[in-house]
Image (tube, rainbow, N blue to C red; front, side, top):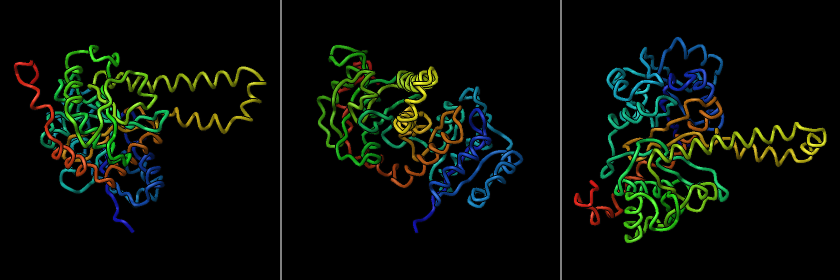
Length: 353
């Protein structure tokens, strides 16, 4: 029997805190029976919820703390006030100390990134970590990054995102040479801002055994699955993510309304309910919940703050799978083995540092 994997949970993070984290962990345990949990937060809140799930209680340990990060805290404020004491910090520190293989939080994204960077540090030569998401597509799944870690990126940082995203795709999808595209407002080389155009030029001119550069891709290519990895900076990436989630909910609402409109529509649904069930599952954003912090010396997963127990379970399972994949070692090997392809082409005279 394989050794168990311990995951540290920020039980107080997110819009609903332990009320979602605990039942979410219980769902994940049903699907991954060898997972164990360290639950960080207010024991007076966590213990009564844990008592409702005997199997989870047996597989968990509560680490009490009175401090937690609020969703509206500024990252710098949360770092000063919550460092060493908050449920978020202690969950991340468990990864650093080797007590846990991964940390999961639905809390404040900026605070989580700041604490993760401060506690775990970035792996050389990465200077900015990113949040990567596994995106459902018509072809299966793609990796999209950055979906909200930092706003803005220069050409070198976009190239580093391509390297890390390709490493993740190889680990998750078992593809020897994944295809990588830069998200842009058009596929023509003359379109886009200077950072995107420069990153495209570097990737075109720098052959790599780690991935195949496809070129520019547009917004509709995200759903098509045109490439295995889509690279963008965090502002555009987060907007794309939220737009896709909103569109999925909108389509689901349209379908429910259409089915309930008439008796014939309801009868038709009875004959096609299997197809509708499959469509509903495909459109459910909870199944893709969980952003992976890439570029750190440890695995940290960011769950959507407003998700329910089912969605949080998906984030926990993602942390479990990333641990089983040996994600950190794979990315470190990829980053260190890949030539620093941005360095020869960039200089301070280009306006890119």
